[in-house]
Image (cartoon, rainbow, N blue to C red; front, side, top):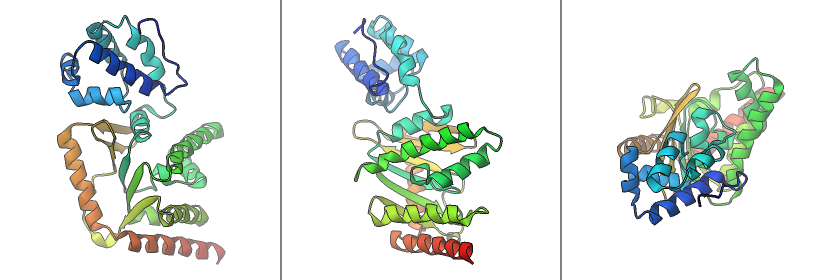
Length: 278
């Protein structure tokens, strides 16, 4: 392995993780034993091996020392770290692509995986009002590429809770939101996603602090991602994941049923379409 480099075009993070597993097992170490000198948990090592976590250069150096891999992980760390997403979201986006189930609470905007091109463009332009058009085009292209996850008919399971504010945050061009809501409704009717709406009538609820995304995997521990303006953090600590899982469960309990949610989404879309043609 010492003389080989990874091909960046062939899912470098997954390849790097596979090589880490081979090297660790060859050294006779468990995930927990490798994690101990790195001051990380065994589950963190498992996520590196599964490709759901990015290997940072400081870990790569230590891993090369511990496993005597002659700089292999340092050399290949750069290829595995490349991402077309912002730094604060890159790890979450790449983990999302490997998840078997994604559960997301969205308090303000339609989740990225469910957005249309026109809706995504309005969102990015609002974030960056002075950005060149080519920058917005690239951001939109990357967001739509993420949504290709839903081309698989069954995996990942996507379950979203949308605050009613998501349905009501309409701009000057109501057709953009109407089209976006129709797109969500189509995905629901095709049984590709589960969506619930948390109506204003629910009052105070468990998700008032902000958005969250829970991800579970076939062969790695679950992760939770929380974000804010230009910032985000991925957690694997079981207590933190458990706390946010309870939050999501409480949100689904407070939200409208999937059937009533679909009816509301389509009703609001129809309202915007009617207003546009009035």
